[in-house]
Image 1 (cartoon, helix red, strand yellow):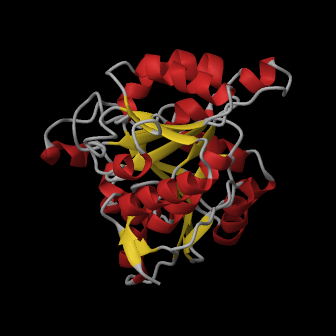
Image 2 (tube, one colour; image 1 turned 45 degrees about the vertical axis):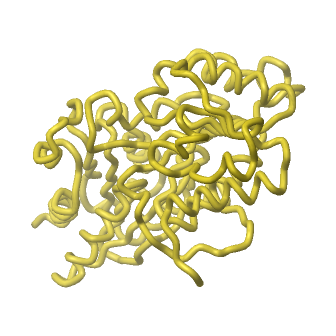
Length: 324
């Protein structure tokens, strides 16, 4: 199978679905003539024209509200928010209109809209925010977190076809990741985790850029005789609880890794789910969470090490669960 970058996989999924469904359109800042500040929508204007690939002014609340209205009227808009921090500007139309439409209209209306939210974790305090837990808390929103090129393509297509709003989180550090991706149009399932590496000693659950960090840690630990199972949930809402519970029943130990702030992060939800299940009696050690300790991400790259979890942090957490 041919291998392509994650950013190219998203672009291919968008283009193939736009060819199939004329109601799909792209809106956002710098997505048309510029091709997206991170290059994801490059070439889309030339193929689909300015009526379906539309540059927006710097008014996130304005074009988010417009997209909600367009979705209610039968289109399937895909918004690019440019950076995750800009979601805060558009919370009212997304949360109070888009996410609530199906409920308040008793199922008679839906908002088939995708909000693409690129993570920039090595930039500045404004754009380097991980806010997926916010949207996981909102009834009506689905939250998608791909970490491989194949998942990125399959999940962006599934997100577009979904009848409800979807937050599609993309990580800047993963855009250049290369992996096998089918050329044909396909969808990846929501709520179905992937076991990235099998193991028997410790379960590590991670998403987005934490997945390669966890996999690298597992590879290093394997050389020391420690077998780590790495689970990538792929979507946080819906969440594949059974995949995690099944793994922890086997290993008896759990480490959760994410770049979001630990306090209020989705890792706490996973820990609570495990603690409230029959699996809690199988635990051989306290659950470990590896995350941002609760500070803004520094602009200086050499300071990121103190804030964002990496391979060494995962290794240390795994060894703590083993009592070593």
